[in-house]
Length: 385
Ligand SMILES: Nc1ncnc2c1ncn2[C@@H]1O[C@H](COP(=O)(O)OP(=O)(O)OP(=O)(O)O)[C@@H](O)[C@H]1O
Image 1 (cartoon, protein in one colour):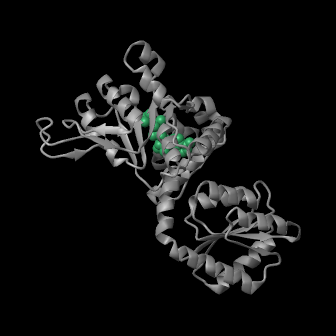
Image 2 (image 1 turned 45 degrees about the horizontal axis):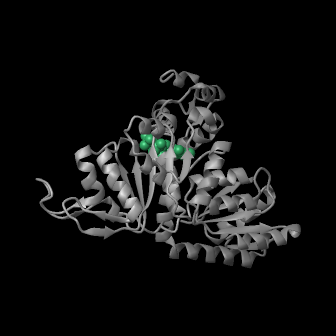
Image 3 (image 1 turned 60 degrees about the vertical axis):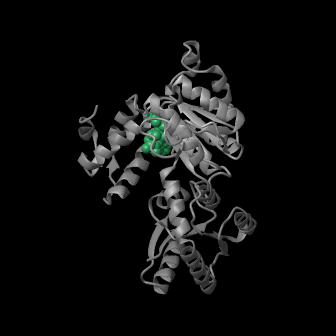
């Protein structure tokens, strides 16, 4: 069953379009949005097959909705509807990647034809689309604060280059998300993104984990094994919690970065690797360097570009958006109806300092989705604050 969104501010046109579409196929599931903001919400929460999108709309116009779809890399054919005055804009939207545009008043045959083609385009791209959805959903970066905007701008500039990036920030702020975005927006996106959590691997195993080993290198090495550097060849290696890496492993990573070569543990054979390294830490590496716990030369190799992801308490204006996003995404995950939240309950969330940052916020919302009332209120909040 195809899901179609009609984004149009004029109720009468919405009604006409809806009638045309349901007459064409009673199995079409039609969604309606009366402005661009609503359209984006529906695009985020529904697996749509196509959108009929008016160019002139309040709040966010059709061009902004299209930009959103493109920025988020959502594979969704956008059919733009243009009025008299905005044919030129309609042509512009085609350049931006709109699927097609039709003029108002829409010609019935052309409208239905365009929708048919858009839907068959979807069939062809089904597999691809599923993959994309997975990516865009998993890596969605919600937030409109200046801080998040700045991070998105840096990512867009840095991602296509091979520059190494060091991401700093407290736990749960979204460092891994930033690393994922850098990979997804780079030319390496079709190649692997390999993550190593340096804090979770015992120091005696980290070298073998990163560089692999040959049979007999140590007692339990009963066969040759490639490490993460080799696994990430052509792609991106994300070294999370790099501040926890042993000095010995740091020396080896430094060599790998300088020479683009590694050696498996127990072997002196060089293996060439083409890997972009992105590292993250919640530690202050400058202090670690002073205490001789982190190599300064490695720091300079890693921190070509520095991205600091701010704590949630320093960008509280993003909380309402994040709350809505988590309410909807968790509801979808659990296959239940989403919940509303009262103004007072939201005030309580805004007043909290979120030491566990976005991860903590997500957990609280998840619990509220299970235990809270259909409209989450102050009473429900008493469970947590
Ligand atoms: N801007 C955001 N929009 C939506 N979800 C976010 C955002 N930032 C973080 N998240 C979500 O919050 C959780 C924590 O983020 P992430 O794992 O990237 O943080 P981190 O800084 O790498 O944490 P740690 O240092 O503990 O590894 C994840 O589920 C992530 O998807």
